[in-house]
Image 1 (tube, rainbow, N blue to C red):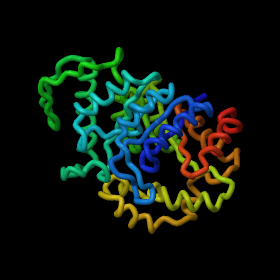
Image 2 (cartoon, rainbow, N blue to C red):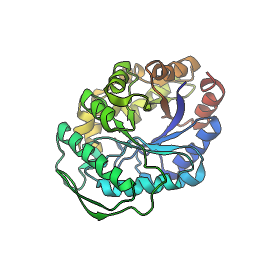
Image 3 (cartoon, one colour):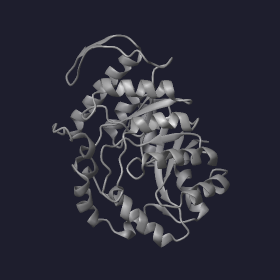
Image 4 (cartoon, rainbow, N blue to C red):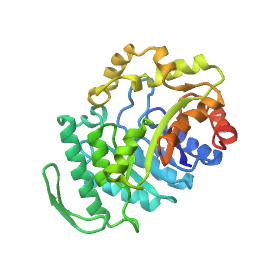
Length: 315
């Protein structure tokens, strides 16, 4: 059976709300936490975007659950040497295992300093080099690195965990999945697609953990839930590479006008049908995932956690 965790959305909630959700998740029987790492929300309706490392520090005091980022981009907005220091400190503070989830990022968050947004194959090269730099720093040794994309001089982390921070790599296509299998400590992908898991396993992932996540909208009025998802998370229905290349929340808002409520209705669990919630999570188990994280979109958080505590997680 997979481990089931709760997915904290920095795009939608203020820091205090995220901490309270983490407490509620632990009380409801969730076994781990994921937290998103953004500079901007996807759209203005989501409306938040706190600094993830501050929130992780607070989580370490509030709950005893393992925490992971899903995902951090250690390539453009933040230098990998700085991400390594943040992750090492988070690991030292975490009462459970801390895992650094990384990916190639989106222009939405990464172009804010005016840097060019590279094509996908270059972003993968940058990510691999960033992982090399961070792994060396996790050892506590002094690092000097002069690579194709990054320079590090006389850098040493003095506060490091006893074991290097595990690095999970996000991949939604064959090239990123291949990289995850070759150099990652785990694999992250958001769709319950068995072929991607199989590619990861056969490509070198072996018995390393595969993690996935989903969003649902619990509520007693299904139509109201659909409207809530459409208002807050219609961006998830945008096709192709739009999610990686659109540069600002207003551009996502423009693109989201192409997404209808019917598209949302057919893609997200909305409402209070226990069987639908169970089936959503079971898809990931059937596809071979080891860890599954679920996030509540709607306002009825108490109802969501009560449903999962009493009826969904027991199954």
